[in-house]
Length: 467
Figure (cartoon, rainbow, N blue to C red):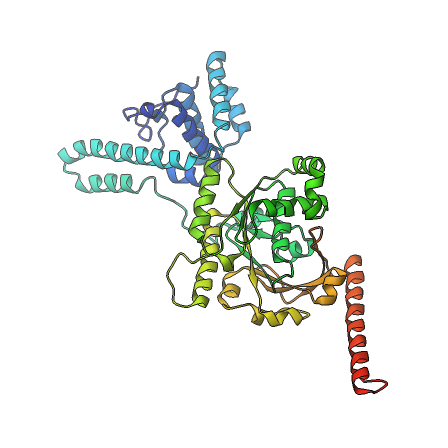
């Protein structure tokens, strides 16, 4: 094995991690090869001599060497190439076995705990080493050197990220994905939002009662499942089983009432969905955003960390903070939801009621959002759905972009809404389907006006009436 040569940066007299066990050491190595922020933070306190085995020291030394030169995580190919210089088959086999174990730990749910404990240990070792070295400096009267040594030890292991350095990080922002989005499944919406919503972002579906807000949220969840994402769906109206049946309907096209008669078909369809769905019911006004956050932590500990949250719907949550007025409470709830999105680094979708008068509107604008305009101010994307009586009969509707932080807003798109089979599709009005759908909806409006004129004519006794 290539020997690890002791030098001022790698004090061989430090304590090692033996009291924490081999499993803990393996998870530390898993963290430094998979988490760039952790490696950046711990780079100046990691010592290969912390690890019991020669293989552990070898891996740690190689990670530090690679990061020191390239400032990024090492790849498996890098380790393979570096091992070619090792001539001892037994030692090389030990490194291979350790790396195999390390790779199985990179997704363990307790890695954050391991990282915190390791940083505490490493910082203590750094301070201990500084104190020991200060003894000789004290005898020599080099007090400034002692201060420098101790100050460095106290700063070690602290977060290094100061923010995006605009002048220096041009390559990073132009070559890395700025937003890791989760698709809505509606192509035209994904286009104007640059892929959907990303971590830390809040989307709101706004509509009057009975239009299909809950179906729209479930459709977004279903489309995420199709992409292999883990979805946590919180319902404050319908029970868990019925929400599950709605997802069954979306995937099978079978009406909810007929789902129990098609169990085998449902099972075969569900088995082929790559994502995982957890549905959790809370009675209205019983849960806060803290309740949702605690449940997400529970899911994560059980290995079901969600990639997206669906909350049906935020107006039925209770604020975690005490406020005097309802509009203040709703504003606080939406801010708390967006905070959850940021803390978990996943997108959150919810729904909001609009005023009753909006049920007669062709397009629902921001001024029809019920009770608190803070909802609009807080959300990143707000889409209103409108369906008049004729739309319900003809399974049509309109989706209007009230707000969009990531692209154009103010646009209105034709929609197919068939809640009997859970179908909600949003179309670009310039697409072939969109053109046909918009023409159909225009004909509906013409027929509606024509019928109204006839009724007025009958009432007034006139043969015809102008528009």
